[in-house]
Structure formats: structure tokens, C-alpha cells
Amino acid sequence: MGSLNHSLAQARLTALLSHYDNFTTLVELSLDTSQIDLSSFHLKARDELKPDICLYAGHLGYSEESDILRMSEMPLLAIEVISPKQGFEDILSKFRAYFALGIKSCWLIMPAIKSIVVYSLPTHFKTFSMKDDEVIDEVLEIHLPLQKIFG
Image 1 (cartoon, rainbow, N blue to C red):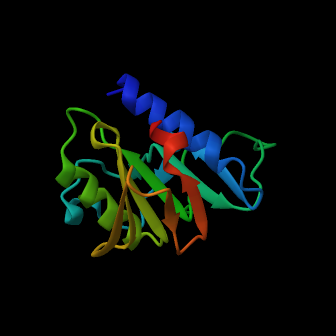
Image 2 (cartoon, rainbow, N blue to C red):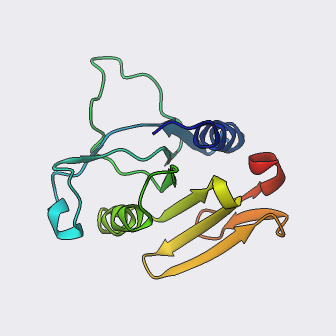
């Protein structure tokens, strides 16, 4: 569901992350998950997941031969922005799948309470809110000002 707050958070995060020259930021990219059984994570998807935002190392450009419909290479970071009618447990199930696929870090963005939870493992996370100056991903060495995301 593309609500105003969801869309703003997604756009602002994408813009802020694009300032990191050593990463490529992509939105709504389908990830090929055919190498694992997503049903074991209680997900309805069969062979793809689509994070709101993902981050790859280096510079990715247009595919010269034909477009890539599902990326087999996993990103370093998957970001999910929770929608007003989306279940929290659904996102946590996706995070468990992302980590099983080799993704290094996952962020849960909660616009309604202006908070971000950064997961470095399915059971290891840190919460950042507007009382903090910035969100910090220690795994990827990313620092973003919360005011520019939610302000």
C-alpha cells in the first residue's frame, strides 16, 4: 500500500543513501529467492521478494543485453517501510528470509512513530527514534540524519 508517509520515507531514504558513492540504491527490485523455500518462513511469495529499498556494493548500471527481472545477486541491505495496514510479523518473516539469503542488514522503517529498527541478525537489532540524531548501521557503516528522513 503506497500511503503518503510510506512514499515519503521511501523517497527520502533513497535520496540520502544515494549520497554514498560506494553503493547503488534501488527501489522495488525483485530478488530471486528460488534457492530457498520461502514457505519455511511463512511467506506467501514463491520465488521472489521485493524490498522497498535495497543497497548493493559498488555501481550498478543499466543492463546492456536485456533487463534483469529478478536479481540473483543479493543486496547488502534490504529496507522495508511498514504500511498502515501491513503486519509487523510479515516483515519480520521477510527479514528472516533475507538473512537466510545472505543479506547483511535489514531496516524496518515505521513512519507512524518516526522510528527505524536496524537488524544485523534476525534477533539482534537497535531502534532509533527522533530522540536520536541519526540512524546508524554498524555493519555497513551508514549514518543518516533522522531529521532528514522524518522531519
